[in-house]
Length: 177
Image (tube, rainbow, N blue to C red; front, side, top):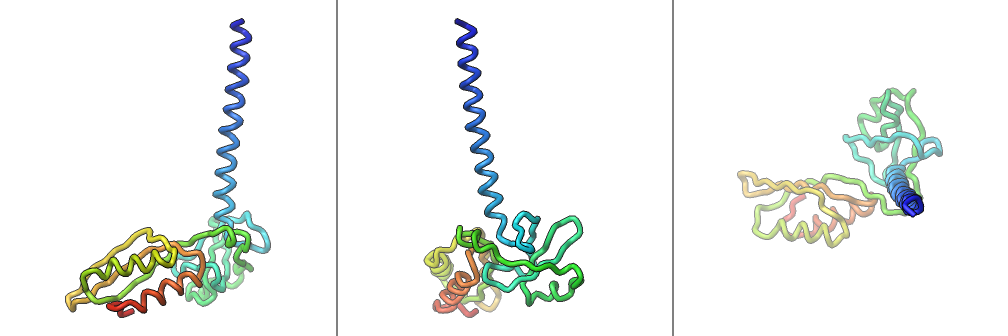
């Protein structure tokens, strides 16, 4: 009887290990799919980095450059650093439409110059939230001339969503630019 109980426990443990392994593999697959926002020469398994100088968003025209030991760095087509790079390292890149359809979000920074008024921070954060955009960080400081500079790090799906947020913010009373 103890041998039968031991074998039963071994089978249960094996089943639990298989379940755990499946969970880990599915999580890894989801993370991999979300990172494959860029196709390089129609392949999506290349190491990709986004240029911090221009923070390209889905919908932007982009170019890629092969880097030493870091895969491909993606810049907007109009980025000055992209224009300075060795054109011999340039590679064709494009946004992966499958990943974009799955709701990939990219983090961008918005800088707002506004009047130093009570309640304006609440208005700005409500405006951003109303556009279905998440604020991941905010930094606000005032200047000597009764103005404020608000810097929001937000997560957007594409350039159109970013434009929607910025135009909604520009329309608020007290926002200068």
